[in-house]
Image (cartoon, rainbow, N blue to C red; front, side, top):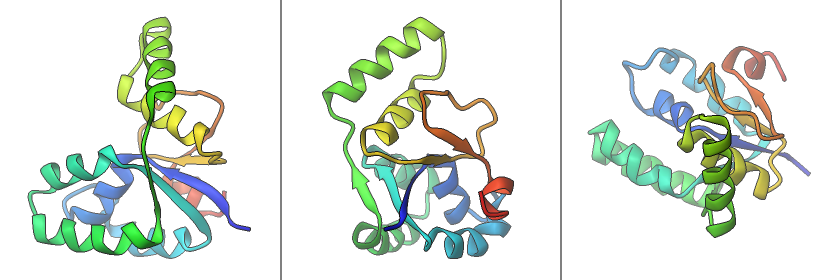
Length: 134
């Protein structure tokens, strides 16, 4: 059984947008992700579509990942936990949503390039550690 990994939105944007800092690593990253059961939250799709401004490319990418990756909802419990956590810790609400969503679906890791991603009990992994085999 493959280990579950949750992708932060910055990872998907790095795959799709050539001007992003880690885009050069996207092929290696996608190859490495084949070893995992990949998760991301469904809210990311509309944000990615909006941010990329390359709607055909985004839609083609979505066409592939919707059958290969797990696109999951937050649900009321995740939203409540993220609100409480953000209020108590004065941290990033979007990161808290992603973190508690990853936790809800049993992901062992969250892959992000965000240096200040929130900690909610799921291992946070950056590009370097991930590509080295973490």
